[in-house]
Length: 145
Image (cartoon, rainbow, N blue to C red; front, side):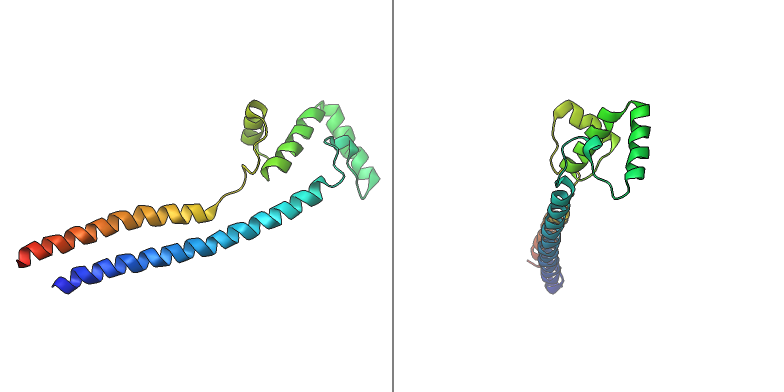
């Protein structure tokens, strides 16, 4: 029955290796997503002055209607702030806007680093599993002796 605890330890180590490989692959996905987000952000800020009123439009009539609506609501500054949060964080939510108004720029706050999540999960699962496999091996070894 000693082979059972040895194979359990091997299974735990194989799972660690698979998890680490998955973390490495997902790290590359994270990197590629960051590159794409950087390209998109560069395109968004090209010609942007920090004020929506200076924005360009493919249909001038649409711009005039949108600007009239924003001006009549009195929320020009709020709209400018929302666009700034979008450009800084990669997304704009009421929570992010509130945090940015209190703390300042929150660069990349909207991006998730999935590889770190996978690596943390692997560590949280592998460490106890390896410990349990070692305890099982030791318990069995003591019974055999």
